[in-house]
Length: 338
View (spheres, rainbow, N blue to C red):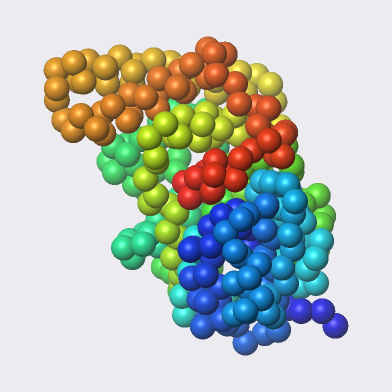
């Protein structure tokens, strides 16, 4: 009989995070039989030596090209034998009995295909992106720090479970791919991760397919995991790639699940949103109001998104050519992933 749980971690030059992640797994290991599989996306950070010397029991899978998040996880699945699969970011740390709680929940809820824990930022605060609504034109257009603070209970964000009793798992639309547990048979039934997504929105796609198949997605508020990357700060000159790639992935999701008209509306509404923000931010920069660094960063972000909407920036090829993605760029993107 195979393992109960297979924990799959994708690493691309993230050994500093990976060490803490692996240590936390074995410090808080579940009571059930489990295995840890590290898929190394063509790193040169000494991951193989670290695992050989300190955790020889970890199954190490080396890829000679950068497969990205979806292909990398599919490769990890191919080397796994668990009844349950945990797709875990390397920049996470398991807390307490989080792993066993997720396993117990899926065992007790046969309709459930996916379970996700409460994610915490490095400072211990709640990472609200751990549960979300599926991306739509409306919630993407309305989403901002201000709107989320003013209307935290709005159904647009899909975060109602945060305000309910956490003693029992709650049905949600989607959980974050930073720490997502899924039944093996359900993962196979929905066709694994869709490799049309290189990174971003692949978790939404997986949860959407599970719900379309009549299965539940559960949020377990009593299970907690640290996710350091959710609070990462973009490096100068690199954020434009990540910002555009996020929009590309959202466009792919909407085209796939809602149709080309919805995809067109998403790009059109994002264009209008970006245009207004560029005007406002440019005006504030001219007046010298607020933090110049923050304003300049936001201005550059929305300018790049506007260029993408107008067809002046296209990174779609990156989604389908993972071998050409540099390891440094991939490591940066995974650090931003929420």
